Amino acid sequence: MSVSVQFIQGLDEEISGISLRKRRDTGTKMVVLFFERVAAIEKGRSFVNQVDKLFLRDEEGEIQVSPNGIKFTFVDDDTLSQAECSFDVHSEAWERVMRFFHRYADVHGFEFSEPNV
Image (cartoon, rainbow, N blue to C red; front, side, top):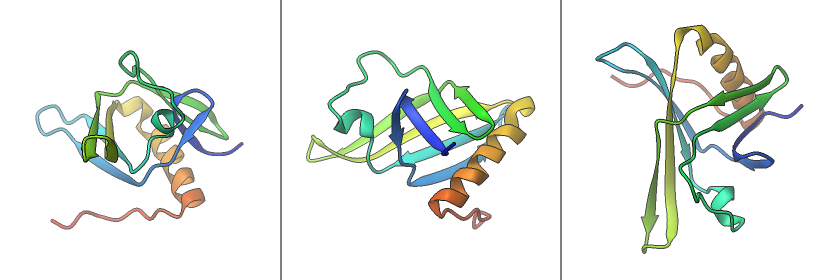
């Protein structure tokens, strides 16, 4: 099975960046995904309702997460520059989500690195 991320089932998205964070107030871990393109928009499908699920699929199965929000940045009012999708990961799911992102990184040539502080 391939490793994929989907806003709409059956339509793969390509992540351009991944940021792992921790909320200072609660300690909850959070993932922020960055996209330069969003296939769901480009294929003529729209987000008619709020996106309430993001599907992460790999050889272990499917993880459904609920985005905190999706932020779209446009250039010239109609050209997507970047999309940013964030979601919280609770402690019991953290290891599974990390296994998924390590697989995604391996397939798509990403490297994990420590932030410059």
